[in-house]
Amino acid sequence: MAGAAPRMTVRAAVLGSPVAHSLSPVLHRAAYAALGLDDWTYTAVECAEDGLAPFLAGLDASWAGLSLTMPLKRVALDLAAEVSELAVAVGGANTLVRRDGRWHADNTDVHGIVAALTEAGLGAPASALVLGGGATAASAFAALARLGLAKARLAVRSPERAAASLAAAERVGLAVDVATLDRVPELLDVDLVVSTLPGRAADAFAAPVAASRAALFDVVYAPWPTALAAAVAGAGRTVVGGFPMLLHQAVRQVTLMTGRTDVPVAAMRAAGETELARRA
Image 1 (cartoon, rainbow, N blue to C red):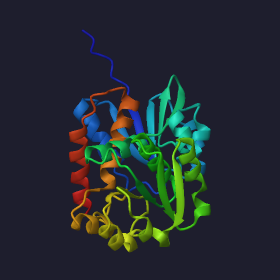
Image 2: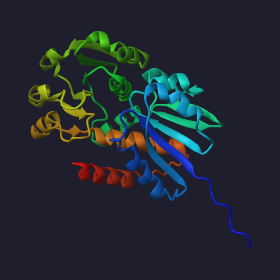
Image 3: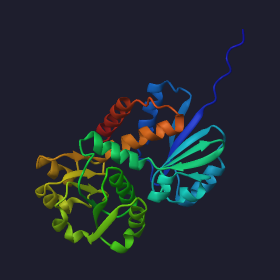
Image 4: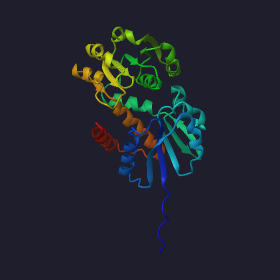
């Protein structure tokens, strides 16, 4: 009796520059293992903005999906055959999924933020202040709108450079009051502070945020905790780090790429936490 034909390897990857630090391979591979998807692979590929188009052109039918990090989230909108309404609204796509031979662009960062805040008991803030006006701020605005806010505050170094995120806020129906970062201490009468600032850029705001009543969502996940997160936690208030957002956006990506809805969140969380502990 002839043996069964070998199954074709199904490929997925995370693309960006730099990308070597990405936790996505650990999360996606943990999901594949728990789901028994032994024929699925997930790798990390260094790819600059001008390299995405030729990379996509060179992929064969074995490729099911791609996770995108900076600087690829905006250019992906121009390269996809179809773009979700959410990705259009946010102004960036972190996910490309092949459907009927065509690339479909979507955004799972918003889902990641909503899920991370909700599981921490912060799913219904009455007011919020966002620090930093880059691409992650645009996703944060969309998430806050989904959580019911009609208005938020934004503090940035240069209001002129926040035009893209402010346009995204307008598209999702969120009114935003803009101020410069030096005014943060005056803006902290809010339920939630969302820091989208990279690395140690938010360290200077640790004391005033800790002295306020606000809970904190800090998108940084390594090194953790940040000075800001440690100060707010030390003041006894709820702190959500970047890892839960990363986890939940990856969970949504696994569903989009594989079609599976029984995604093993616990297994992915454990794998990610183990890897972060190893890197610390």
